[in-house]
Length: 145
Image (cartoon, rainbow, N blue to C red; front, side):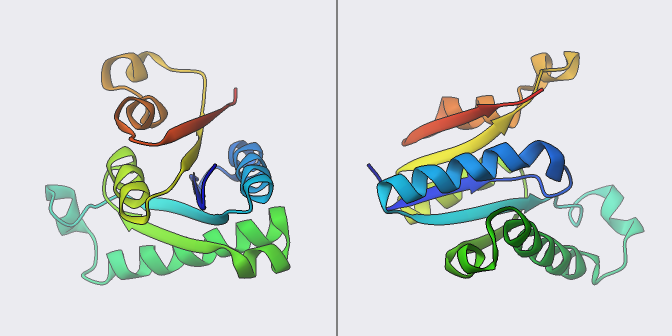
């Protein structure tokens, strides 16, 4: 089906992301595909909010996200699998960065989690819905609480 499976995770909510990562690893294994695991750090630099952070805040946030992502993959899938996984940390809007990474690497499938929508999600649209709506490849949504 695909030579690349892109798994989008929110490393700040590991308890909700475990089924997503496990399903992505299963799909990659079944397809003989490479597993790319990504997370997205918000971009505060260009906003008024950004002026309240130190100049090196973004670099530190990227480093922490990279370390958290690798540690989480190791915890859930094991160190042997983590060694084979490509880790991606992007900055910006979650759905835009997931779509950008999938397009750039020509991913065959995106695996992303979804949660029970809140009232806010009905107005803004959750990331999973945006990815499904705008992706040019297949999207597997792992439904959570």
